[in-house]
Amino acid sequence: MKRALIPNRLRSNRKNVEIAVENKIETINAEKFVWIDLQNPDRSDVEKLAEKYNFNELNIEDCLTKFELPKLDSYDNHFFVILQFPPLSQKVGISKNSQLSIFVGKDFLVTVHQGDLKPLVDLVDICKSESDIQRRNRILKRSSVLLLHEIIDVLVDDLQHISRKIIANLDEIEDRVFDETKPVARSIALLRREINRLRRIANPLKKFVAEITKNVQRFSSEDDGEISLYFDDVIDHIDKVIETLEESRETMEIYKDTDFVLSTEKTNKVLAVLTIIFTLAIPATVIGTFYGMNVELPGGIDNSASILGPFTTFIIVIIASSISAIMMFAYFKRHGWINN
Image 1 (cartoon, rainbow, N blue to C red):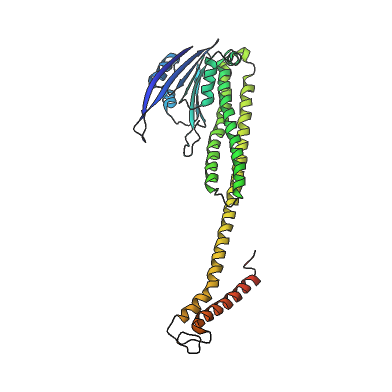
Image 2 (image 1 turned 90 degrees about the vertical axis):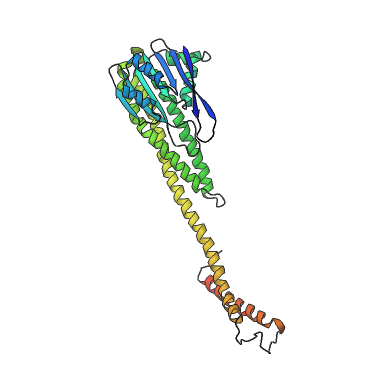
């Protein structure tokens, strides 16, 4: 078992500081094959393996590209596949997927990734350590094909875990949708984006796992048993993820429509109250405007017959405005324009 650490320096665009990123090459020797895992590899690291195992130059370019569409290329002594999985970081605004490139032959398995697939990194650590001998032997004692199944299986299990988190978030959003005091539109939009991103991962993944099942048969040993059964189990798990995402997508559409309807209703209520207040204030505005003009009106400021004293004008305006407002309110109430 060999381990090489190659330091690499990347400069952050936001801060003038250097961030250390480790390039790791883990070589794990099993009984019948060797597993080489490359995290954040340099081109020279991959090219050395390409010379040793006769990898295609185009595949080398693909695995060094940080974002490449899923693909599968088959050759005489190996096949090459690129798969996409959700990244370890689930921060808002991060939408790039994590890429896993795999070269599989009868006596070797090479995995190339950026170190952000935690289940795969944990699996490497298990195979390196001596703490869990039973699981380590179960993973490494047979063939490279079963190790490939184990890698895909743990990553799909992590995908299932993320889909269960989405279900939990749906339950939380359901409570917030019917709570007028909490805004929920942004949460709905972010969760819809996450669901769509996972759908774009899960749907191609099912197709490529099925293709892998056809290609690995020639690299399996007699001790492996029926290989297709192992990968069929993975496909079943992917189907469950896809089903969960489709149901979540439909539920999110319902929540989006419900939030829109409730928000519109709330807005209409506010506008209705403001309209009623403005309408009831119109008589007072009109009457007050007339009494503010330099014209002779009953109870005006120049009227000598101010029977109610110096406040005659004010009292007449209040009485006239109140009678008009009460009549309008009664009319609105009768026609059902004002309810409880």
